[in-house]
Each structure stands twice: as structure tokens, then as C-alpha cells.
Amino acid sequence: VQLQASGGGSVQAGDSLALSCAASGRTFTNLIIGWFRQAPGKEREFIATISKNGSETKYADSVKGRFTISRDNVQKMVYLQMNSLKPEDTAIYYCGARSLSAVYLSKLSDNYVHWGQGTLVTVSS
Image (tube, rainbow, N blue to C red; front, side):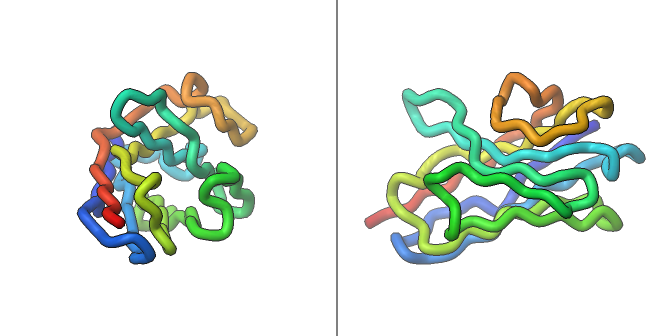
């Protein structure tokens, strides 16, 4: 499985941004996908995750109500719609996938075995 995050950029506080995670491979529909971010000098932080069929999602408290994760299994894409962005949302954003055998959503980055290159989001005040 190969993942590639895109859509980052520089925005003002209060703006919106949509990130995309493109996946390759025929097993995409069997993968739990998560979004994480890492700010300079900080550990990788959980943002959101979505189940294989998109019916279940989980969010970090810091983004709940502002960010929305979704997926399109036909296009093999996972999206992260980010609204009401804050300067503290500035980070490199990564999408990750759990192993095929995983059943439950997880907020732990160690439980994700496939990672794409990140995309930088910068929010200025």
C-alpha cells in the first residue's frame, strides 16, 4: 500500500483547507485510514480515523466539530476537510493505514503500518 497526502498550504486563521490522501493497491477498501499531524518539536498527534466502509469515525478533541474525515473507496481516496483553522493547527499532516487484519479504529500512531509523505499546513493569525 502506498499513500500520498496532498492539499496543504498556507492560510489565515478561520480559513478552510481540504487535504486528500491517495492510495494505491487493490486492498484499499479493507484498510482503516487515519490522519495524524506533527508540529515542529512535537510528537505525531492523532487527528481523525475512518473505518473501512466509512461508517465509523473518530476525532481528536482538538479538532472535533472543525474537521471532517471521509473516504471514497471507488476513487481510493480519503479526505480531511478542515474548517475554522487555528494557528495551532500548523503542522505536517500525514495519512496512515492500519494493517489489513485490523478491525478497530485506533488513535495510536504505532498501530498504523503504512504512511505517506506528509503535506504541510501553515495557519497564520
